[in-house]
Image 1: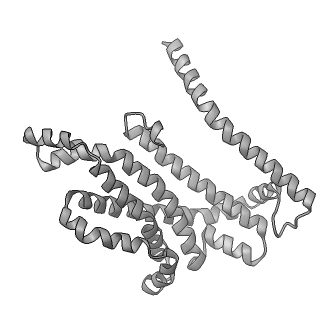
Image 2: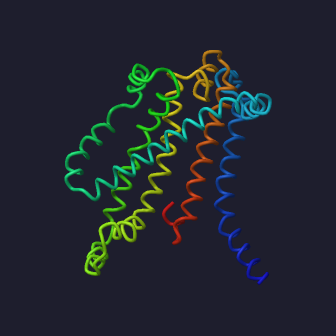
Image 3: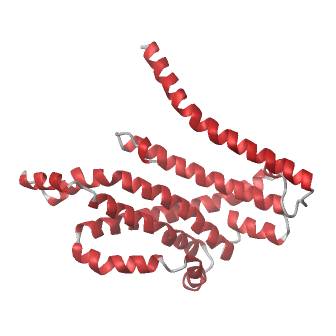
Length: 265
C-alpha cells in the first residue's frame, strides 16, 4: 500500500515538475534581465524601479498593501458572485427557451460591447461613491462570459441522449439536472475562470474612479506621488490575488468534475 502511495506521489511530481520549473526559470531570467538592465542603463527609480527595490517596498510596507488588498478582494468576490448567479441564470434561460433567446440575447450582446469604463461615471451618479457602484461595475464586466459559456455548455449536450431520456419518460427538470447541466460544467468552469479575472479588472477600474481605499486607489495615489516602487508593488499584489483566485477555481473544478479536466484548462 505504501509503495502504491509512493509511486502515485512520484508520478504526480514527475508530471508537475516541468509545469512548475518552466515558468519559474523563465520568470527568474526575466527578473535578472530587468534588474541588470535597469542598473546598467541607470534608469531612474521614478520611471522603472528594480525588482529588488519593489520587493523591498513589499516587505517594508506590507501592512499598507494588506490594508488596501482587503477592500479590493472582498468587492471583487461580491461582484463575481453576482455575475455567476445572474450569468448562469441567463445562460440557462437562453438555452432552454427559444423565445427568451430570440428576444434577450441580442440585448445582452449589445450591452457587452458598451465600453465598461464609460459606465463608471454613470454608476457614480446612480449609486454614489460607495461599494455598490464598484461591485456593480465588476459584475457587468464579469457576467458576460458566464452567460455565453453556460449557454454554449447546455447547447453542447448530445441530442441523442436527450431523446433517449424523453423516450424513458424523463421530465424536463430531470433531463436538465442529469444530462444537460453536467455536460455544461466544463464550459461553466471556463466561464468562471474568465469571469474572475474580469471581476478583478472591473474592481480596479472602479477604484480608479470612485474609491478612497483598495489597490486601485493605492495605484492612483502612488502615481500622483511619483512613488513608482509602491505602484509596482500594488500591481504585483493585485496579480497575486488574481492568480490565487484563478487557481482556486481550477482546484474547485477538479473536485467537482470527476473526469480529467487537465486537458480543458
